Length: 423
Image (cartoon, rainbow, N blue to C red):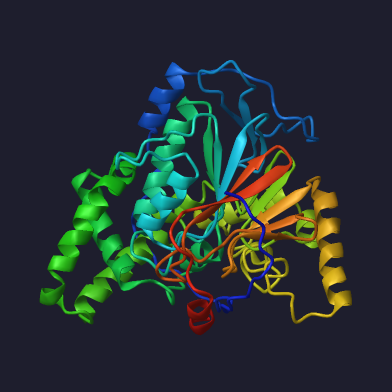
């Protein structure tokens, strides 16, 4: 089912103040071997040439192949570390907006996207599809690490079939790495505590613990709810344990922050640009690969070396940063025509500078559903599906070449009256 709805609204959230992150002795997952990936890549390895883009001859960009075992279409080629430029010829692309810690809605969205099995086995059924998640997995819900674990598992499975899973970090990922826990659900603090215990049970093998957490987490969540009467909803000792665990995991250089550092804040797949808030001309001038590297280095705790800023302001701070920008996703019904024309002109300038034709953003919930503006040059696909936001029905964006459509679930839409009241 496909339709294009233009009614939308903004959902205000203030950028974070300066914050210092907590310290911990936990090691980064980057040093751990990727056993599952190695097993899969050894069975279906293909070699290909790099994607066609202009780069200095002396420093060729790193690239990864997602060729799978299919010879029907060309393999996916990834340039940049973290991934920045992707060539995915002939692939179906599916984009999913903000998830905010809601595992059930995440599964529903992935099922209607046709990439996740509906039998509860969390199997990739998307074949050579490319899945893109637009950030804000953290905050407002209690299953954050479980969602990250599920997406990692699907990425491993997708690579074996010639597909791929990409994530871009949003403002709530950068806020948490910066030590800003204002929007953390109480259950998410508990999940961090339980995950650290699970990591210890796995003898601190990050890959094993992280990959298996999505299967373990639901049982742990049920046990937490049964013991809630014992702890009490406002038990300060329990909360303090959760804050310490979260700080240890998400501080710059912490294992979960280093896991997030594997993902970009700006991703370009063929002619489509994906980012959480919105790309602007000065971001492109600064360099999108440079922005991705700086954020990744900061998350890995390397922000004081190699001339990288401690906190990459252009990407993570301020109303016009990549993860906070709402210029394209805001409600424009209260603007004058000349203001709307200015926004469209900025969007056109940005796309021309980056060599793209369309941009897809999340960040600002669209109460009337995913929609496009400015001759569909910008798609806004955050529908507030999480129970911690609008609890709306899941929607995803399907892209085939230069054509896109919204795929919706069959559940009745969150009523307009409730949405207005919530906002």
